[in-house]
Image (tube, rainbow, N blue to C red; front, side, top):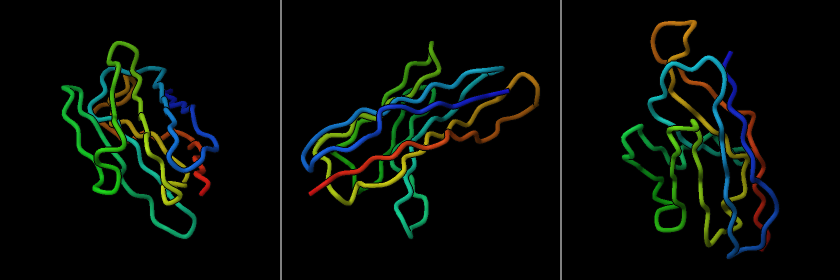
Amino acid sequence: QVQLVESGGGLVQAGGSLRLSCAASGSIFSINTMGWYRQAPGKQRELVARITSGGSTNYADSVKGRFTISRDNANNTVYLQMNSLKPEDTAVYYCDAVLAPYYRSGYTDYWGQGTQVTVSS
């Protein structure tokens, strides 16, 4: 089986910073893209940032210049450094990995359980 475990969420004041981590573990053959999505109450889940195995990144316009995604391929871990946080960044943040497990052919989306980020004004 494959697991994605997130950590680093919490409560922070506007203008503050948080760093999210997500570690993928289990029977993993290869990981392609890893990323972060978020879902605020009453809204659809949206892409925040993603990074390929080669290090190419893309970001939602709303977080460009404030958030930075990075990746440790050796440890199957992805990070999201969030600076200058705003109340509108409040959401549950989900880690995503497009990976190929040993027990199934092809690449599939796997998701973490989510971590709450709350930014107070």
